[in-house]
Length: 402
Ligand SMILES: *Cc1c(COP(=O)(O)O)cnc(C)c1O
Image (cartoon, rainbow, N blue to C red; front, top):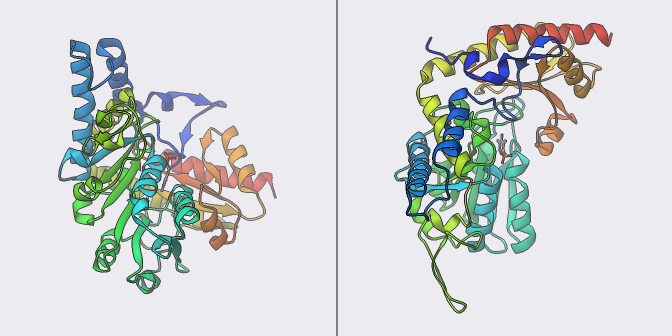
């Protein structure tokens, strides 16, 4: 298999607490390949400048690199044009942008449909909008197997539905959601669709035109790129109908104290100096991903997940929460009588990095009936040895707390 090896990621060559690091927290943030680090260093050491301004050589070179990152992202998502790609700080800001801007077209009584699987980033901005405008939030439940209840979704849809905002893949459970079907059903009642792809872009094939969504958001740092950069994809005619989000330089055409005219998308939504180096770094991360055999990567991640499930399910006292028929790269679990935070602390002593907590999904934790879970998440650089370490770690925790 033409797979990315651990050695592409310099941080993973280290020892942690006397052990080779088994990094199983990529769903929170992924490690960076040398390729991305080099691309970012090159901008700063060879031709750094602001973008869209200087006529001098550095300015032209940096602007070309910045705009070519936008093109790479458009291709990566199969957007119709790079004008549909807005740079944001992260997925959170992308959703806040849609809530603040598209949200202005909504009025009291209009309905927004969310799901129990959502990350707080796809809940709180809509709660703000509800407080401001009186829109009504409806929530699609999950089923006992932790897949989305599509029958319940269809029942919630109606003439008042103006937006469906849904994750394509749960960051807490790994559940994969049939977003194309959701988009088709939502459009049939005239609603717009926002898909949170923060996890999905890393582990699934994403094609925004096939999905048919109006908005798609993701965040750079989970896709092997830097932090501080995220993406809002918006279908051009939808973006073009939306008012600006923030005001400032870069987003205007003409400014006087009486009248201001704005640029077309995407620039209308990019006030101020953007995260230049980070955007170029995200473009490099996409180049890196494109250089891999995508099918092999997905098969590798599936194999790691299956092996981890098999190993953990065989250990008495382990409860696995990631049980939906369609799921990817994430294994959420608990060990009887041991607090998830204690598990993560013991794991750290063994050089194993996992996440313990509510995973920014408190409503989902409530549905699961727990305050927290332990989450192991898998990425392109993980190996079967990491899975082995995870299973051994669980055995050690059980001994320690028995
Ligand atoms: C991580 C994540 C977010 C938020 O990403 P930020 O980089 O913190 O903005 C939103 N949704 C999902 C599903 C995530 O996994």
